[in-house]
Amino acid sequence: MILDGGFGKDFGKGSESAAMESPLLGLILDSSEIIAAEIAGQISGEQAAKGITLPADDLLIGASAIEQGYAVATLNTRHFAKIPGLQVLAP
Image 1: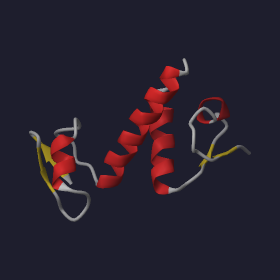
Image 2: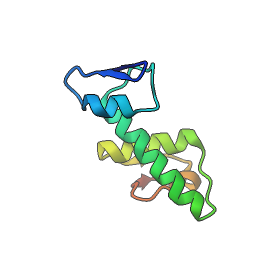
Image 3: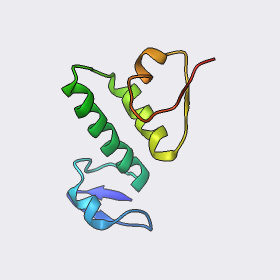
Image 4: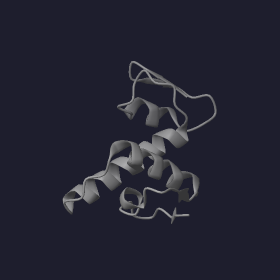
């Protein structure tokens, strides 16, 4: 999907209305990336309400894994364990 100037051109993934509503204009994204960004925003807001701040990069990795149904294998369990719904694997 290509988002440009508020108008989405759908090439088989997602919906045009989702593209037009996206704040991620000018980026080339597919629907799974948009969903992961929405998941990250929701988790960030929920955790912030509890006083928990998560690094954006870890949050986006975690949200992408949740969206795809994957676990994250990491040595950085301190951050990833704070992401609800994410399965974290530590060696």
